Length: 338
Image (cartoon, rainbow, N blue to C red):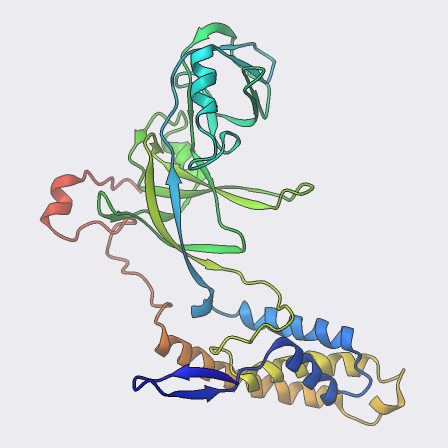
């Protein structure tokens, strides 16, 4: 039982099922279902329901921070080597980066308008940057360089971006673009300063203690520190001990889905256990599927009534939703070539 306050200050109680209650109830519905399998089936039902729509409880606020570009000092590069040697001024400037708003290894390195390299590591003591690949252009000493950030990791448990805005220049960034599209119009990445697009870049799988992540590219390339408020849909994770099922998912709907999978287990194990014989598990499964569809419709409707989030965007507006008044048009130069 969970207390829910009312306007008058009093409280009424709403029953919310938790993870343990769900899998224990499931065990009582199907004979010989052991706790480990009941937990596995409960998680399976949770994942199936969680992935059916953009539930209100999976919407999260965050922000993307672009750092100031670092160009102080000069560097020495060697063709065919991943090591970049920094002079004293460059070493001090890069060391000052720290992790605010991102670490050096989250940023990129380039000479002039040459190819962009990701940074693998930095050594203050050695006055060096190590790139993720060998430097491919002719090396030289005393080169002017840039260290900045083009690629940004999506939050943990990420599913999709919903909204990313530039509050200073008052527009919403386009989110339905890819790196390949940017490559066609700006392969050199020579367009810098004010980004109006967040494009899919690549997926990096997990490696050791480093978690997998999705990278996105801000374009045009930002060169100054700025905060971009964002809204995203998370995928959700498995339930843990004591965790309550969200109120948007009715208990009856959740348990019907869990029994649907439990009946499948019972049908496949009816030859092993006498207690499971003589029951038409296939029919029970079909009945559960039909019941779930009706309950799911109601849950979707109620979630939408409580928190509107699945309304489609206005297709008449440009990707970055410009055009909300004369101030916008006077301060922007929209690009309609998409």
